[in-house]
Image (cartoon, rainbow, N blue to C red; front, side, top):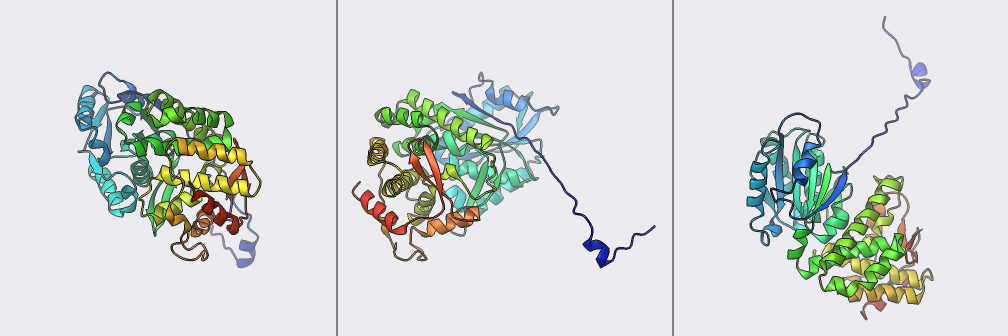
Length: 398
Protein backbone atom coordinates (compact mmCIF):
# COMPACT_ATOMS: atom_id res chain seq x y z
CA UNK A 1 0.00 0.00 0.00
CA UNK A 2 1.39 3.39 -1.00
CA UNK A 3 0.33 6.48 0.90
CA UNK A 4 -0.51 9.41 -1.32
CA UNK A 5 -0.12 12.84 0.21
CA UNK A 6 -1.76 15.89 -1.25
CA UNK A 7 -0.84 19.45 -0.42
CA UNK A 8 -4.00 19.65 1.67
CA UNK A 9 -3.15 16.61 3.80
CA UNK A 10 0.48 17.73 4.22
CA UNK A 11 -0.64 21.11 5.52
CA UNK A 12 -2.65 19.35 8.22
CA UNK A 13 0.09 17.01 9.42
CA UNK A 14 1.02 17.52 13.05
CA UNK A 15 4.66 18.35 13.80
CA UNK A 16 6.79 15.54 15.22
CA UNK A 17 8.12 16.74 18.54
CA UNK A 18 11.55 15.66 19.70
CA UNK A 19 13.06 16.30 23.13
CA UNK A 20 16.56 15.13 24.00
CA UNK A 21 18.15 15.42 27.43
CA UNK A 22 21.91 14.87 27.59
CA UNK A 23 23.94 14.82 30.80
CA UNK A 24 27.59 15.84 30.72
CA UNK A 25 29.89 15.01 33.60
CA UNK A 26 33.59 15.64 34.05
CA UNK A 27 36.01 16.25 36.90
CA UNK A 28 38.55 19.01 37.40
CA UNK A 29 41.48 17.59 39.35
CA UNK A 30 44.29 19.35 41.21
CA UNK A 31 47.73 17.81 41.53
CA UNK A 32 51.49 18.44 41.38
CA UNK A 33 54.01 16.82 39.01
CA UNK A 34 51.42 15.09 36.88
CA UNK A 35 53.95 13.19 34.76
CA UNK A 36 55.86 11.68 37.66
CA UNK A 37 55.47 7.93 37.06
CA UNK A 38 54.34 7.51 40.67
CA UNK A 39 51.50 10.01 40.21
CA UNK A 40 48.47 7.87 39.31
CA UNK A 41 46.10 10.68 38.30
CA UNK A 42 46.48 10.59 34.51
CA UNK A 43 46.40 6.82 34.17
CA UNK A 44 43.51 6.54 36.63
CA UNK A 45 41.58 9.15 34.65
CA UNK A 46 41.96 7.11 31.48
CA UNK A 47 41.34 3.84 33.33
CA UNK A 48 37.86 4.99 34.38
CA UNK A 49 36.83 4.45 30.77
CA UNK A 50 34.66 1.35 30.53
CA UNK A 51 36.12 0.31 27.16
CA UNK A 52 38.33 -2.78 27.35
CA UNK A 53 41.95 -2.69 26.24
CA UNK A 54 44.86 -0.27 26.09
CA UNK A 55 43.71 3.30 25.42
CA UNK A 56 45.28 5.11 22.47
CA UNK A 57 46.08 8.79 22.72
CA UNK A 58 47.94 11.63 21.02
CA UNK A 59 49.31 14.83 22.50
CA UNK A 60 49.36 18.46 21.37
CA UNK A 61 51.78 20.65 23.32
CA UNK A 62 52.15 24.42 23.71
CA UNK A 63 55.60 25.18 22.29
CA UNK A 64 56.12 28.04 24.71
CA UNK A 65 55.85 25.60 27.60
CA UNK A 66 58.82 23.55 26.43
CA UNK A 67 61.16 26.53 26.79
CA UNK A 68 60.76 26.22 30.55
CA UNK A 69 59.99 22.52 30.89
CA UNK A 70 62.54 21.04 28.52
CA UNK A 71 62.29 17.60 30.12
CA UNK A 72 58.51 17.36 29.95
CA UNK A 73 58.25 15.28 26.78
CA UNK A 74 60.79 12.78 28.09
CA UNK A 75 58.79 12.54 31.33
CA UNK A 76 55.64 11.96 29.29
CA UNK A 77 57.29 9.13 27.33
CA UNK A 78 58.53 7.53 30.55
CA UNK A 79 55.06 7.84 32.10
CA UNK A 80 53.50 6.18 29.07
CA UNK A 81 56.00 3.32 29.12
CA UNK A 82 55.51 2.82 32.87
CA UNK A 83 51.74 2.54 32.38
CA UNK A 84 51.82 0.74 29.02
CA UNK A 85 49.26 -1.80 30.19
CA UNK A 86 46.65 1.00 30.21
CA UNK A 87 47.70 3.76 27.79
CA UNK A 88 49.61 4.01 24.51
CA UNK A 89 51.00 7.12 22.85
CA UNK A 90 50.49 6.37 19.16
CA UNK A 91 52.17 9.37 17.51
CA UNK A 92 54.92 11.84 18.13
CA UNK A 93 53.59 14.85 20.12
CA UNK A 94 52.58 17.78 17.93
CA UNK A 95 54.09 21.08 19.08
CA UNK A 96 52.14 24.24 18.25
CA UNK A 97 52.80 27.93 18.97
CA UNK A 98 51.60 29.24 22.32
CA UNK A 99 49.45 32.30 22.89
CA UNK A 100 46.90 33.76 20.50
CA UNK A 101 48.97 32.62 17.50
CA UNK A 102 47.52 29.17 18.16
CA UNK A 103 44.03 30.47 17.41
CA UNK A 104 44.93 32.70 14.47
CA UNK A 105 46.42 30.09 12.12
CA UNK A 106 43.83 27.75 10.54
CA UNK A 107 46.64 25.47 9.32
CA UNK A 108 47.19 24.36 12.92
CA UNK A 109 43.64 23.01 13.10
CA UNK A 110 44.30 21.00 9.94
CA UNK A 111 47.54 19.64 11.40
CA UNK A 112 45.73 18.33 14.47
CA UNK A 113 43.02 16.73 12.36
CA UNK A 114 45.75 15.15 10.24
CA UNK A 115 47.43 13.83 13.41
CA UNK A 116 44.17 12.27 14.61
CA UNK A 117 43.54 10.69 11.21
CA UNK A 118 47.04 9.25 10.76
CA UNK A 119 47.12 7.92 14.32
CA UNK A 120 43.90 6.00 13.67
CA UNK A 121 42.07 7.46 16.65
CA UNK A 122 38.41 6.73 17.20
CA UNK A 123 35.79 8.23 19.46
CA UNK A 124 37.04 6.08 22.34
CA UNK A 125 40.57 7.42 21.96
CA UNK A 126 42.04 10.46 23.69
CA UNK A 127 43.77 13.66 22.78
CA UNK A 128 45.74 15.46 25.48
CA UNK A 129 46.03 19.23 25.17
CA UNK A 130 48.90 20.59 27.25
CA UNK A 131 49.36 24.34 27.45
CA UNK A 132 47.79 27.71 27.93
CA UNK A 133 44.20 28.69 27.25
CA UNK A 134 44.64 29.55 23.57
CA UNK A 135 46.25 26.19 22.78
CA UNK A 136 43.53 24.37 24.73
CA UNK A 137 40.88 26.27 22.77
CA UNK A 138 42.48 25.11 19.51
CA UNK A 139 42.90 21.50 20.62
CA UNK A 140 39.37 21.40 22.01
CA UNK A 141 37.92 22.63 18.72
CA UNK A 142 39.92 20.03 16.79
CA UNK A 143 38.88 17.27 19.21
CA UNK A 144 35.20 18.23 19.03
CA UNK A 145 35.14 18.21 15.23
CA UNK A 146 37.11 15.02 14.51
CA UNK A 147 34.76 12.01 14.37
CA UNK A 148 32.22 14.44 15.90
CA UNK A 149 34.12 14.15 19.17
CA UNK A 150 37.43 12.70 20.35
CA UNK A 151 37.77 12.45 24.14
CA UNK A 152 39.67 15.51 25.29
CA UNK A 153 41.82 15.68 28.40
CA UNK A 154 42.90 19.23 29.12
CA UNK A 155 46.13 19.86 31.01
CA UNK A 156 46.16 23.64 31.58
CA UNK A 157 49.56 25.18 32.33
CA UNK A 158 48.72 28.83 33.06
CA UNK A 159 46.73 30.53 35.80
CA UNK A 160 44.09 31.70 33.34
CA UNK A 161 43.67 28.25 31.82
CA UNK A 162 43.51 26.51 35.21
CA UNK A 163 40.92 28.83 36.71
CA UNK A 164 38.77 29.72 33.70
CA UNK A 165 39.26 28.82 30.04
CA UNK A 166 40.57 25.31 30.62
CA UNK A 167 37.79 24.16 32.95
CA UNK A 168 34.72 25.15 30.94
CA UNK A 169 32.83 23.78 27.94
CA UNK A 170 33.90 26.15 25.17
CA UNK A 171 36.45 25.63 22.39
CA UNK A 172 37.30 28.02 19.58
CA UNK A 173 39.64 29.66 17.12
CA UNK A 174 39.66 33.18 15.72
CA UNK A 175 38.47 34.04 12.21
CA UNK A 176 37.55 37.08 10.11
CA UNK A 177 39.33 39.35 12.56
CA UNK A 178 36.97 38.28 15.35
CA UNK A 179 37.73 36.53 18.61
CA UNK A 180 36.32 32.99 18.91
CA UNK A 181 34.29 33.22 15.69
CA UNK A 182 34.60 29.48 15.04
CA UNK A 183 34.01 27.10 17.90
CA UNK A 184 31.97 24.49 19.71
CA UNK A 185 30.42 23.76 23.06
CA UNK A 186 31.98 20.42 23.96
CA UNK A 187 32.83 19.48 27.55
CA UNK A 188 36.20 17.80 28.14
CA UNK A 189 36.59 14.24 29.38
CA UNK A 190 38.60 15.62 32.32
CA UNK A 191 40.77 18.57 33.37
CA UNK A 192 44.05 17.96 35.19
CA UNK A 193 45.48 21.06 36.88
CA UNK A 194 49.17 20.73 37.81
CA UNK A 195 50.39 23.60 39.99
CA UNK A 196 54.05 22.81 39.20
CA UNK A 197 53.59 24.39 35.78
CA UNK A 198 52.79 27.76 37.35
CA UNK A 199 56.21 28.26 38.90
CA UNK A 200 57.84 28.95 35.53
CA UNK A 201 55.30 31.53 34.33
CA UNK A 202 56.59 35.01 33.70
CA UNK A 203 55.04 37.82 35.73
CA UNK A 204 52.64 38.82 32.97
CA UNK A 205 51.14 35.35 32.59
CA UNK A 206 51.12 34.81 36.36
CA UNK A 207 49.16 38.02 36.83
CA UNK A 208 46.88 37.71 33.79
CA UNK A 209 44.88 34.80 35.10
CA UNK A 210 43.95 36.69 38.25
CA UNK A 211 41.85 39.03 36.10
CA UNK A 212 39.33 36.24 35.50
CA UNK A 213 39.17 35.55 39.22
CA UNK A 214 38.44 39.24 39.88
CA UNK A 215 35.77 39.16 37.19
CA UNK A 216 33.85 36.23 38.64
CA UNK A 217 34.32 37.52 42.21
CA UNK A 218 32.89 40.93 41.31
CA UNK A 219 29.73 39.47 39.78
CA UNK A 220 29.20 36.50 42.10
CA UNK A 221 31.13 36.48 45.38
CA UNK A 222 31.99 39.59 47.41
CA UNK A 223 33.92 37.54 49.97
CA UNK A 224 36.12 36.13 47.24
CA UNK A 225 36.83 39.63 45.96
CA UNK A 226 37.81 40.72 49.46
CA UNK A 227 40.16 37.74 49.67
CA UNK A 228 41.82 38.69 46.39
CA UNK A 229 42.02 42.35 47.39
CA UNK A 230 43.54 41.63 50.80
CA UNK A 231 46.06 39.26 49.21
CA UNK A 232 46.83 41.35 46.14
CA UNK A 233 50.39 42.11 47.22
CA UNK A 234 51.04 38.45 48.04
CA UNK A 235 49.75 37.46 44.61
CA UNK A 236 51.92 40.10 42.96
CA UNK A 237 54.88 38.61 44.86
CA UNK A 238 54.03 35.14 43.47
CA UNK A 239 52.78 33.42 46.61
CA UNK A 240 51.91 29.98 45.23
CA UNK A 241 49.70 28.98 48.17
CA UNK A 242 47.50 32.04 47.78
CA UNK A 243 47.41 31.54 44.01
CA UNK A 244 46.22 27.96 44.41
CA UNK A 245 43.34 29.17 46.60
CA UNK A 246 42.44 31.77 43.98
CA UNK A 247 42.54 29.21 41.17
CA UNK A 248 40.40 26.71 43.07
CA UNK A 249 37.65 29.16 44.02
CA UNK A 250 37.64 30.80 40.61
CA UNK A 251 37.30 27.44 38.85
CA UNK A 252 34.58 26.44 41.31
CA UNK A 253 32.54 29.59 40.62
CA UNK A 254 32.86 29.16 36.86
CA UNK A 255 31.77 25.53 37.03
CA UNK A 256 28.86 26.33 39.33
CA UNK A 257 27.62 28.90 36.84
CA UNK A 258 28.01 26.59 33.85
CA UNK A 259 26.20 23.77 35.64
CA UNK A 260 23.46 25.73 37.38
CA UNK A 261 22.68 28.80 35.27
CA UNK A 262 20.24 26.93 33.04
CA UNK A 263 22.10 28.04 29.91
CA UNK A 264 25.43 26.16 29.82
CA UNK A 265 25.72 26.41 26.03
CA UNK A 266 24.67 30.07 25.89
CA UNK A 267 21.52 29.69 23.84
CA UNK A 268 20.20 32.99 25.17
CA UNK A 269 21.50 36.52 24.74
CA UNK A 270 23.04 36.86 28.19
CA UNK A 271 26.60 35.95 29.06
CA UNK A 272 27.28 37.22 32.60
CA UNK A 273 30.62 35.43 32.89
CA UNK A 274 31.92 37.77 30.20
CA UNK A 275 31.82 40.85 32.42
CA UNK A 276 34.45 43.21 31.02
CA UNK A 277 34.98 41.07 27.95
CA UNK A 278 33.29 43.08 25.21
CA UNK A 279 36.08 45.64 25.47
CA UNK A 280 38.74 43.03 26.24
CA UNK A 281 38.14 41.02 23.07
CA UNK A 282 38.15 44.19 21.01
CA UNK A 283 41.35 45.45 22.65
CA UNK A 284 43.14 42.19 21.95
CA UNK A 285 42.37 42.65 18.26
CA UNK A 286 43.18 46.38 18.21
CA UNK A 287 46.56 45.81 19.88
CA UNK A 288 47.32 42.93 17.50
CA UNK A 289 47.39 40.75 20.64
CA UNK A 290 50.13 42.79 22.25
CA UNK A 291 47.96 42.53 25.34
CA UNK A 292 47.53 39.14 26.97
CA UNK A 293 43.89 38.09 27.33
CA UNK A 294 43.99 38.63 31.10
CA UNK A 295 45.59 42.06 30.68
CA UNK A 296 42.82 43.07 28.29
CA UNK A 297 40.21 41.65 30.69
CA UNK A 298 41.65 43.74 33.53
CA UNK A 299 41.21 46.87 31.41
CA UNK A 300 37.70 45.75 30.44
CA UNK A 301 36.81 45.21 34.10
CA UNK A 302 38.15 48.64 34.97
CA UNK A 303 36.19 50.21 32.12
CA UNK A 304 32.86 48.54 32.94
CA UNK A 305 33.34 49.18 36.67
CA UNK A 306 34.01 52.86 35.96
CA UNK A 307 30.94 53.03 33.76
CA UNK A 308 28.90 51.28 36.49
CA UNK A 309 30.00 54.03 38.85
CA UNK A 310 29.19 56.84 36.41
CA UNK A 311 25.63 55.57 35.90
CA UNK A 312 25.13 55.30 39.65
CA UNK A 313 25.10 51.53 40.05
CA UNK A 314 28.10 51.30 42.36
CA UNK A 315 29.56 53.86 44.73
CA UNK A 316 32.82 55.71 44.25
CA UNK A 317 34.21 53.82 47.27
CA UNK A 318 33.46 50.48 45.58
CA UNK A 319 34.93 51.74 42.32
CA UNK A 320 38.16 52.81 44.00
CA UNK A 321 38.36 49.45 45.78
CA UNK A 322 38.21 47.69 42.40
CA UNK A 323 40.68 50.01 40.70
CA UNK A 324 43.19 49.86 43.55
CA UNK A 325 43.01 46.08 43.68
CA UNK A 326 43.82 45.87 39.98
CA UNK A 327 46.70 48.32 40.43
CA UNK A 328 48.05 46.44 43.47
CA UNK A 329 48.20 43.31 41.33
CA UNK A 330 50.30 45.19 38.80
CA UNK A 331 47.75 45.64 36.02
CA UNK A 332 47.76 48.64 33.71
CA UNK A 333 44.26 50.03 33.32
CA UNK A 334 44.67 51.96 30.09
CA UNK A 335 45.86 51.33 26.54
CA UNK A 336 45.95 54.06 23.87
CA UNK A 337 43.76 51.93 21.60
CA UNK A 338 40.86 52.55 24.00
CA UNK A 339 40.54 56.13 22.78
CA UNK A 340 40.89 55.65 19.02
CA UNK A 341 38.01 56.67 16.75
CA UNK A 342 35.40 56.78 19.50
CA UNK A 343 33.28 59.25 17.56
CA UNK A 344 32.70 56.76 14.73
CA UNK A 345 31.42 53.41 16.00
CA UNK A 346 31.73 51.92 12.50
CA UNK A 347 35.42 52.77 12.14
CA UNK A 348 37.66 49.66 12.02
CA UNK A 349 39.73 51.10 14.88
CA UNK A 350 36.81 52.04 17.15
CA UNK A 351 36.58 50.26 20.50
CA UNK A 352 32.80 50.58 20.33
CA UNK A 353 32.63 48.16 17.40
CA UNK A 354 33.19 45.62 20.14
CA UNK A 355 29.65 46.25 21.39
CA UNK A 356 28.22 45.37 18.00
CA UNK A 357 30.42 42.28 17.70
CA UNK A 358 29.40 41.20 21.21
CA UNK A 359 25.73 41.50 20.27
CA UNK A 360 26.25 39.67 16.97
CA UNK A 361 28.09 36.86 18.72
CA UNK A 362 25.21 36.22 21.12
CA UNK A 363 22.29 37.18 18.92
CA UNK A 364 19.22 39.06 20.12
CA UNK A 365 19.47 42.37 21.89
CA UNK A 366 22.61 43.80 23.38
CA UNK A 367 23.13 42.29 26.82
CA UNK A 368 26.03 43.44 28.99
CA UNK A 369 26.85 42.64 32.59
CA UNK A 370 27.61 45.62 34.81
CA UNK A 371 27.95 45.83 38.59
CA UNK A 372 25.03 46.47 40.90
CA UNK A 373 27.51 46.23 43.78
CA UNK A 374 30.64 44.23 44.48
CA UNK A 375 29.59 40.59 44.31
CA UNK A 376 26.46 41.20 42.25
CA UNK A 377 26.18 41.66 38.49
CA UNK A 378 23.26 43.18 36.65
CA UNK A 379 22.21 42.86 33.00
CA UNK A 380 21.71 46.01 30.91
CA UNK A 381 20.58 46.28 27.30
CA UNK A 382 21.28 49.93 26.53
CA UNK A 383 24.48 51.89 27.15
CA UNK A 384 25.42 55.56 27.07
CA UNK A 385 28.43 55.96 24.79
CA UNK A 386 29.15 59.45 26.13
CA UNK A 387 29.57 58.03 29.63
CA UNK A 388 31.79 55.26 28.26
CA UNK A 389 33.97 57.95 26.69
CA UNK A 390 34.11 59.67 30.07
CA UNK A 391 35.08 56.37 31.70
CA UNK A 392 37.92 55.98 29.20
CA UNK A 393 39.15 59.49 29.99
CA UNK A 394 39.17 58.67 33.71
CA UNK A 395 41.18 55.50 33.15
CA UNK A 396 43.77 57.45 31.16
CA UNK A 397 44.92 58.84 34.54
CA UNK A 398 45.76 55.33 35.78
